[in-house]
Image (cartoon, rainbow, N blue to C red; front, side):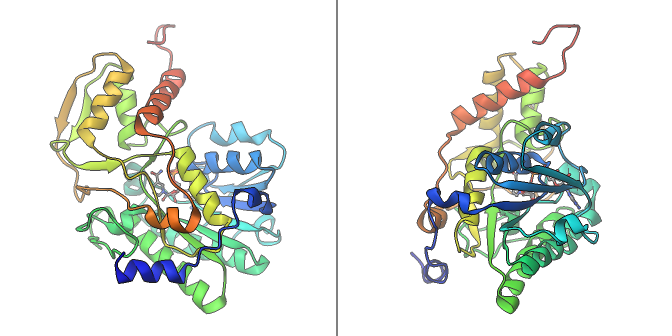
Length: 345
Ligand code: NAD
């Protein structure tokens, strides 16, 4: 263990209350709760008997995600932009935890909405922190492995400060999250708000939008349609894929602790993008070929979390391996894909 990691361990004393105490969260505000990760998080909280207020402007949410939750007891939906002054249903309610997830998250979305992405990380994070400060709630910030940029250190530990291009196209997302982390820690230090910063690595699973541009849903759609699976560059760049149930369990474990983080939440199994395409192609079973396309600007070459801090501080580790997770995900996309000519392939 290096001195810096040791510092993080000692400043983040292990104070997790344990899985039996998950019900200590009685009411939670989830910004971005109609999105991919957010809707799974809302479901997991409702399953634990938590009252959930989901605030979302539906700008990048998967169609139908929040309608599925709408009928559940304890679920309340507020359609609102988190970067604008929040309605009384959020500011005058007492929460135990504010999960701040609202932000465009896929490259397709944040490149289409660059200034809105910066506002969600800045004004949106400020609003989430203000709600929490007013009612004494804890804040869990959904940050990202993108704060490491195109990393020069592998695997990435929380002590690594990153290699980010501050003016490249992806900077609207990377720098918004870096600012959100800085603001969250500043409010914690200055005003004593309880915070936990999760650096989420690539998360996948049922409920992603098939057109969100991320590798797994794109490959699933292409493979199931029997179209060429488009791999950027030579496909040797790596990703580590974390199944959404594991990510959600990590966020809840962080909420149930006093750990400030930042703490990596991801799966350390590292796969090349080409291998991911091949696995999904095999699972789809349509014989879709692989097609190589030009690499994307500032696309990180390697991504792999060191999750030993989360294991040590939160007792959390990913449980779903990529074989099982990808199989479930391909079957999900097979089930929801549009029926063509009355026949689903
Ligand atoms: P998503 O796009 O599916 O969900 C984001 C949700 O936030 C959407 O429902 C969208 O409508 C909402 N939203 C966006 N801007 C908003 C605004 N200004 N006001 C209110 N709502 C707004 O993305 P996701 O994959 O579910 O990501 C959720 C969070 O987790 C994001 O903060 C993202 O940065 C973080 N994260 C996700 C991953 C991943 O692999 N999925 C990885 C790292 C970090």
